[in-house]
Image (cartoon, rainbow over all chains, first blue to last red; front, side, top):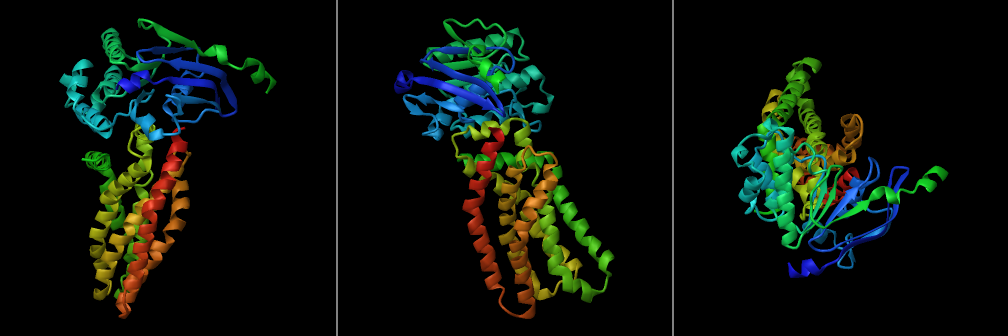
Length: 217
Length: 221
């Protein structure tokens, strides 16, 4: 883990294209251990796209994202093993129960040892044996977020994590993030809402929208 | 337990809980084969002549029926995105999902096939080759089908497109599967046909997961 905290996670001169549209260009970021990077910007400014680039789900149009100097596509397996990506869709099957869902995702990453702790943290223990089709939207979101604690990963990539969460659920998430940072982890959050996080860096994506070029094209 | 087995177990559990899919495939197989005596007439001679081909063609169509769901449900609820990001290589995951698909469709079809062959008066000497041929051929159907299912993810009317893509690729399995039964009935060895089915399976095991995984990465990009 000591090695992980010294590693540099950074991107340089990134550009992203979705279809015909160049969403952002010339974007740089660097995220040290214990850091939080908040992605801000209006709809369509590329917050989700940037998170997906960081996860290695799609290659950037230009530029490089690197971990400790090595491009994330150089050793894609190692990069996947060190990250959690919680996107808009929650990867929940209606017929599996809460415990089965969480155990599956944790065990696929190695071990389900922390599953009970994750259920407790996101106040899902009482619902553990309930099939997921009976969960409310907020409970589904808490179950998706519980994957963060159920198996360790040093880099958390969260896309609108507070959507449909109540105040207590948001509080649970913030506590998890604080503990994760204290242990040397890093977090990137795309969010519209206000989040009270200490020493969070902000990246405003509309600064990188290539307006002139978009009009010229 | 390895990630491979966990994924197989999860897919089997989902198939059992949802129940419908595997049962529907079997019901389709039974009903369609039962239509043939009505269509071509009940004369045992006619039925005996077409028995092997009918059982095999119907099994192909039945296997096709459940293929569309192979990745579609995971694609729609975001599980596929999460699976792509798991440390376990996606190729191995495809293999696991194809195995689960075979266990819920190919295997039951193989078990029921002799019963349907009986219905069509298949010559008694052909049963061995039919069952062994189906046991060797249906895993190949699941693997080739996985490539088709991955390629048609996100396409409108993916099911129809999937059939058009996959059915031509099923022809070799059909030829050697039926060939094995025919050979045994006329008294020559079914072995060359069965060995060719093994060859097809051995080629599909490494190739199909690579192709399907590439298509899945495209789909979630």
